[in-house]
Image 1 (cartoon, rainbow, N blue to C red):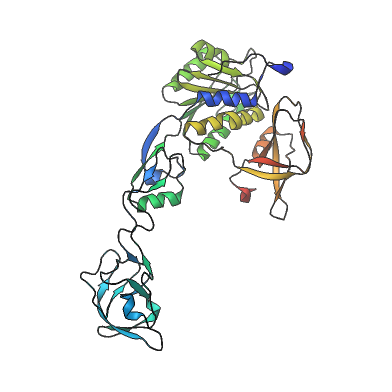
Image 2 (image 1 turned 135 degrees about the horizontal axis):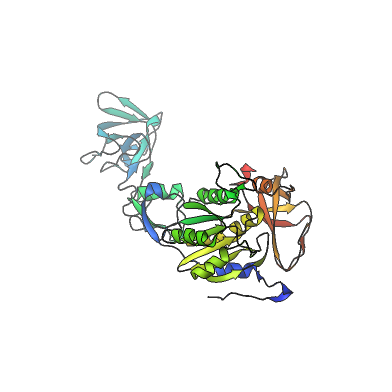
Length: 421
């Protein structure tokens, strides 16, 4: 485990963004596993390989409505020279034909019905003309295996159908159901406590006093967690050391991770870090060369990771998305990045304030009419409107002073997909 870094080159006293990510990755791990029924597993992550319990289908079944026949009996059948067969009976999905089908006979079947013993092909109903009472004229040939779904061809008992670490999309859950599986071992998602700190912060719906504002950061963070199916609880606490300590201690027993919002920078009114120091957390870092979000801190309290996010809306957003959210994914067994990445061509230069820092910029992504996308800076003096209106984020990595117009760059999407831009 890396220890807290107090000084670095460039004279800033802050650690780099990539180093911060490494420290976070070393400090968090999956929070556990649970077995859930199929209807609760969508988009969860498998915690173990998933093995089919039964084959699908269990027996050979018909792919068509028609007649099961012996292929040799209809080898020369055609519309001009149909073959007359005796109808020995019927078979339906869920119930098969009892007995052996003799030469010169056929069994009426429907899609999904078991293939009767003695037959090896199915002639589709449009090539069959029934003649009462017990005969059918077959007007097309059917080689062995025609219109038959063989036992186990969809999935075979004992086969691995999902690998550990794979996400359980609807199609995979349908396959699991067909394979006789009713519950799946998945990684448990972390439970998150969001603590908004500040005398000036009020819960939505309360009457604002002079100088107060609503806890929009808290609402935004919770909305992101809800979007990804991560459960959370929230609280608001005043700038009082005892109150902050009580509130944090109240969350410790139930939360897998604690996110604080506000009170992290270090002024005389920023009390969170000092309270956590008193409570005995192990601080891993405080301040990093990332903009916005430089005042973020991370540490471990007992076994619980704690992220201290700045109170400014832009800094709060970026610290959550770039530091806390990837950690929460890791704790839930995810290996992918939380935000989808697309590539788009820059419509303008995007400059960094300092090449020693990692900077993130709000952008808008626009289709160019040729199946590609262009990206430009989102310009709005309102931080909250930028949070609401930007469709993506562009990163200027440490070591670069600018991204140039015309460059194709990775863009983190802040919307579910390109169709929502």
